[in-house]
Length: 381
Image 1 (cartoon, rainbow, N blue to C red):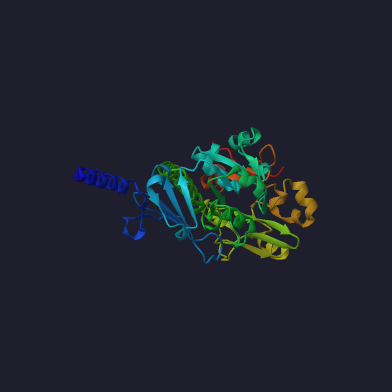
Image 2: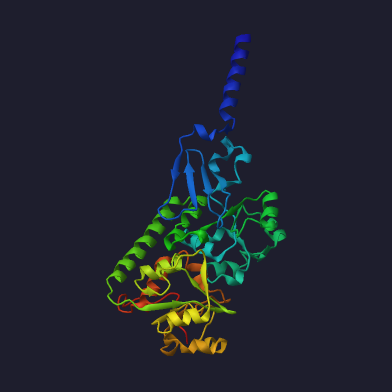
């Protein structure tokens, strides 16, 4: 009888051991690291139990990286991680999310998970029909302004993760959210230096929703479309000269030659007049410097926020001296908006550089894409 009792106790011990959560030593796991073709700001390490997503460059000149554990929901009961090793532990697929930039919304829609979005700061800026329908149906709560998110409403929503972006890492609101136990992930797509690198951040969202294969497929299509358009444009013999930007107070801001915007112009095979410059961020020039170089430019793209030739003229009579103004060859994306005024380009342009490139090609080389209708850029009325 004693032997049977001891055997029964031993069996209970074995069963209990089998059901105990596993504490994983990352160093002892077989780990596969995903580096990406264009994006430099994050990578994903995977083993059979969970993934680790590392943000390496969340803002310019950042000296800090952020590490997040992504645990499949079915592994939660059998897996224990040391929370001190991570900036956040997130269950996947995410079922409730808050994002803080309109540039994040196209990724959710492309992955068909926009219904998981429960809150957004500045909902009027959202132009997408699908997400606007959710906002209008009160499925997505207004969270105030980005620089001052309504944390009371956000905490009430209890999202599983907040996807934010940081200018320098000093964000008191995000610190409050993190202290409440909700992970904040810094999305650094805006820091990337090429259009395709920015677009590749759809793979960041793919990891959150267990849709890696779908994210890869979507990006591959965008990349293919982009490169096909680039190849078509490369065959054009005449390259029009292009001016960009406008004055803000007394300073004319325009893209440097190493910017993603300049990369788009290069890939569209145009002669951007500042393509040989190198600078972080925008160039800041005087009116005289721009006028001297670009008075005879064929095309003027993105003249700041001005939405008509008349408004451009009212802002500064000297704008009318440019040939592009005289010939009405000024194109902007500011007039394509959603029903509440959100500019579509600001939302969708980062995710779809293939469409932006095709728009520029259509404007600068109309015959290359004869049946194409621009999505963002239209001539100023």
